[in-house]
Length: 102
Image 1 (cartoon, helix red, strand yellow):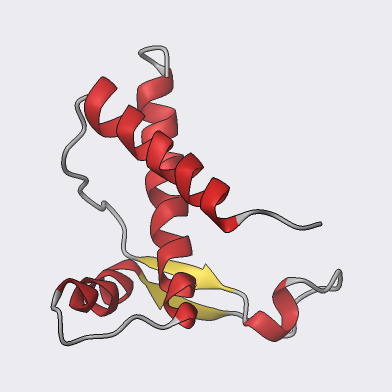
Image 2: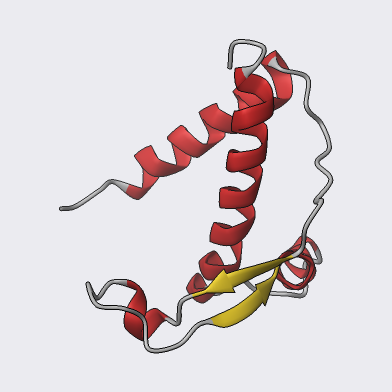
C-alpha cells in the first residue's frame, strides 16, 4: 500500500476544519493523560506484545509544542507523538459529537 502524503495532510486538515469551524471546537481538555503503548518493534507483529510501556499525552504535547518555536526543527519521528494525541481526541470527540450528528 502507498499513500500520497499531501493527500493525507489534506484529509487531516479537512477533519480539523470540520471539528473547529463546523462544530465550533477550539480547545480540547484531556481527562486522562497516560496510555498503554506497544513498543514499535512489536506493534505491527501479529503476536501478543512482549511488553507494554506507558505513554503520557502531556509529555507528547510538550515535546511537540516546542516545534512552535522557530529554533526547534521538526524530525519525522515526532509523528509518533502526534498519533496518541490524535487517537485520544478522535475517540473523545467522535463519541461526544456523534450524539449531535457528527
